[in-house]
Length: 463
Image 1 (spheres, rainbow, N blue to C red):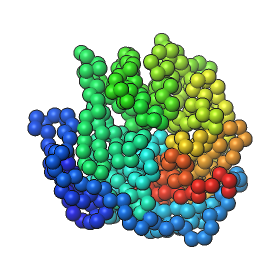
Image 2: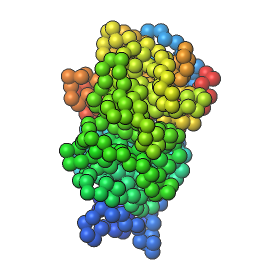
Image 3: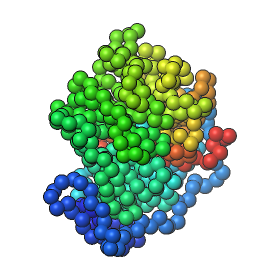
Image 4: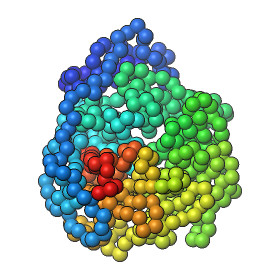
């Protein structure tokens, strides 16, 4: 290993020789100690990101027909797979590989126990699918070559890194009240927007989505919330990155809000309030609660769900903006039309045996009409329902297809604090051919997790 100081940051990053940044990089520290971005010296040699190397081979044999039934099956116990050696799921036949290796991929000064994909509602792959981002359990960010799955080192990012919609080397991230961009190829960092001036006279300490939000598909519109020193939300923001302009703000009474985001096409602002409404009632503009949805101009607030839990936005087969979530009052995986408020029940959830947890990913916008679901806290070691401890895809229509992809081999015991990291939180790439998820592979009570990848053939929907 060798360490280099990346351009425009004082952080060191250790890189396997020949795999990542090459060339010289100078330090561009900020002289006044502020966090204003500084571009790399135009006269200095620029580092380049090498994406060479032999792509990791797939699993041997022809891809199987995927499992689309709801039969009760049992997990096949097996040792933790070797790093970066593809294998087939013994039950479903899909090709899987362990991407990360906590023993070798973590930097020496990173106290994390493991590595994972950030979250189900976040896109882990860059615009052209050549790079893959992982998070350590202590919130450090690691870059991987998505073809070879070799680690490319740690990145100097702060919170909520989101890949640029067009440029495969650019990541935007949140640094308190500032939106920044970082070029993983050149090491150049720049300030995109400082939101301090957008809330004059108010002590705003953060402008962000609170971990779970993402910009619109084209990367133009961002839905953010401003928080005060007590970490209560005091305002909403819609930001137009293309025009570098805050196009709407809305003050709200200090509130506890789980997260906010903008819808895939940028038409709706979504806010998930911790306060929920009584059964049979929804929030409204004057009395918000549960899931609140606003127009892009932050007007016409509507309550669409009385309680909001794990969920994600998606596009249905007709290109409509929807939210996929568990129906709190119906125990159904459901689809909510963000424009009309219509709820469509898709598949029942059987809570009769164990308290199944579910995460949703609608990030595969190039394959509209599908969502990815991962479950945890189901039956162990014996499965009681067809969806226990699994990753599967569902078609976003009544009686649509269900495609079962893998057992997670992850134990998430609600009595073990560390087992939060064991929630699979699977996320799909842009066209739903590569899926990442997290697993502790049976090591309950530890943060020693790894990120795994399911590799599907391009024509999987016809299989």
